[in-house]
Image (cartoon, rainbow, N blue to C red; front, side):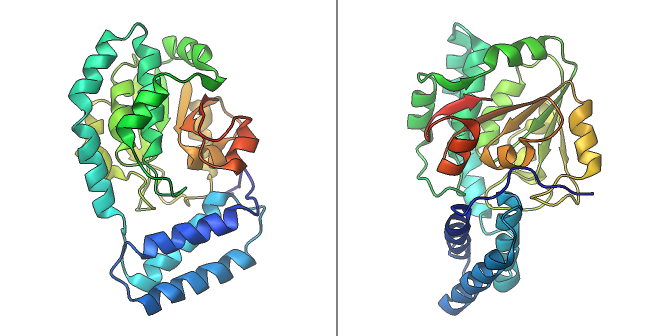
Length: 278
């Protein structure tokens, strides 16, 4: 049976509505269609239980966008540009990684910095400035040493990816892991989250096996995938959406992300704008 994890908050409703409108605006739909999207999404949100996960609510709203506009991947171009933009930074970033006093920590910080490439919370993206900042600021929640120690003995690592563009920086970290790594991406388009197509485009398949969660819903965890989480030696989860979904699972999961909203800040115990290895 599918089960929810982190419950939604009243603040999630206006955030999802804004996200829904911004998604509709990525399509060539008319103003009348966009209005219909917003009205349907507002009605759907009003009927959903706040015991649902924020991801479940967002998934329902995004399905309305697809139904009304006929666009199955509104952020396709955004994802392509994000991947190509970050790929252009790789030579310089890899050189910095090789020079770092602690390449593992540096790689973790790069992976977290990539989490800024997110259309969900509505933040403007300045990836280069974010990388510079994340390489310097302290972790607000710091389980880095535990993650390092667990990875030293791990042979099976499950890596839950988040956004396009961000996955380029994930690749730099995954390249340094001495284990079999399985990267999990979305089965179908959802905002600017990475699918198998985006993962292949940046060569993730060259450093890890790439899979999707199949028919599992965006905002739910099936028993099958719950079992896979518990079987892995180490699970690395990227991004707020994955934190919302997987924070209560009965498995050892390390969460790497940039805190982008007050709801998650309260949950993880770290201020907005901070970085965490939780």
